[in-house]
Image 1: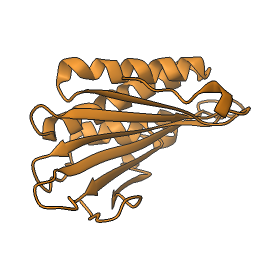
Image 2: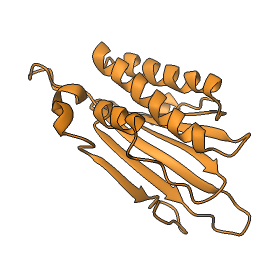
Image 3: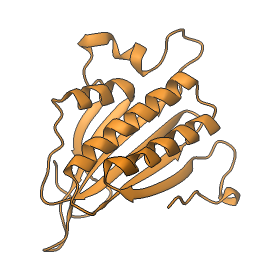
Length: 178
């Protein structure tokens, strides 16, 4: 399901929000990656940035899908403005699960995205599911500086997780750190 914000609510340069829900299984995750690429292309991001975003979204969704409860849906929410695209992907998990940040997938994700955050939410009532989310942002490169972009700014091997963080979901009550 994709629900874009109605055009009449948008002014020039205002964020455009899209939400996608798919089963948290590998064959369904391509939909989220495709939506990410389409949004970036429509916002006229450079092709290298679009490719970085697609790969980062794919890594984020794959990491979360591996920890998801069977039969649960992955929710991807995108916010697009003139300077950046942000995506928050989340799944229900079977318990207080931590996303490993010492893996190759995490390294790829933090090199491709400008900012990455892991968010965790504890259930507010007994029997409710835990939520685990990844929030990432890819910024439009500064075209006045040659070579600007996540890969160039990562600085090669010596810059792991430059803007990566593991935090709790702060926008809802009853949250806990991951």
